[in-house]
Amino acid sequence: MRLTTTKEKILSGILMAERITGKKESLPILSCILFDAGRDLTLRATNLEAGIEVSIPCEVEEKGVTAVSATVISQTLRSIGGDKVTLKTEDGNLVVESRGTRTLIKAIPHEEFPALSGASEQKGISLMRERVLRGIQAVAYAASPSMIRPELGSIYVSIKRDGIVCVATDSFRLAEKSVIGKGPDGPEILIPLKHALELAHVLEKSSAEEVSLSADESQLVVAMDGVRFVSRVVDGTFPNYKEILPKNFTTEATVLKNDLSEMLKKARVFSGNDQHVGLHVYPKRKIFSATARSADVGEMSDSIDAALSGEDIDINFHIGYLADCLPTIQSDSVVLGFSGAGKPLVIRGVSDPSFTYLVMPLNR
Image (cartoon, rainbow, N blue to C red):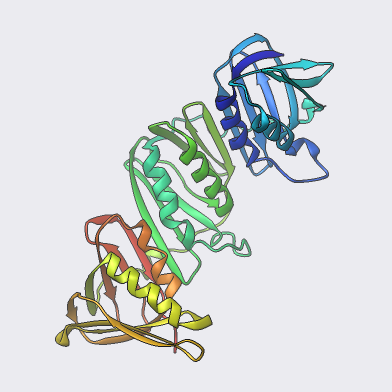
């Protein structure tokens, strides 16, 4: 193998691939990146649950395949000063040369490298990259960090002809985001949270305008300019969340998102370790206020301007569960729909029908 490319292109591909490598000591090949030089250079990495392929434009003088430690190759390229990099194999090992530097990296037999499954090569649904990224980011924080119940530790994705719906819940709150797209109807899948976050990282680093997303019962494939990301999907059933979304609200409040965010920030300071905040909504008196208290810090009570309707309500929530959704709402004002004491609150953006957030109150 012998090829020449720019440091910027190859390093960006290697850093993307390095995040997907495995850490199993029993399988050292999983901590490697596979370099496959054909017409262009293809980098591959996998941890057996997720995998990535990145194509790097370069001048290939001699074709070949080799596998080296992801950590060693990424640190080597980071330390190189030159713009152009030459990679070649010598006696089965990889040599990296650039402007007066020469580094030899021991290779691992590449025959052991697991094949990246091609998932369904069926035509995927075409979506704007930015929208898919926003779809994942809009719900990821609501998934459980634990995989004890895999369906709660995953992001549910429903693939439809007119786009996808991303949903996540940890049973205390639920976030749903719709993303517009076009393509064939697809399945409903569960992507483990850690793989969904890796996919978000890949989408963030890509400059592609559109991505293609296809899936079957066992895996998801997302393809964009020069990058293909593969993830296993969870075999499980996501809760029928539509049933718990309230159909009617007894009280509604429309507030500026920034006012609510600042109010919750202050409440967080005074709420102590339990992070509880009380919301008090009195439509007839035109009052929307929040209270928080802690034996160690003190107490606060703040009111903000709001358009109110319905019945009076006093209800308690975990501050983080209320505040987490606000950065993802693409609207200056939000509507809070209360369905009664002890029942869930629904938050939506006034001009953003694509996002719905449900949070359960505290029983106290």
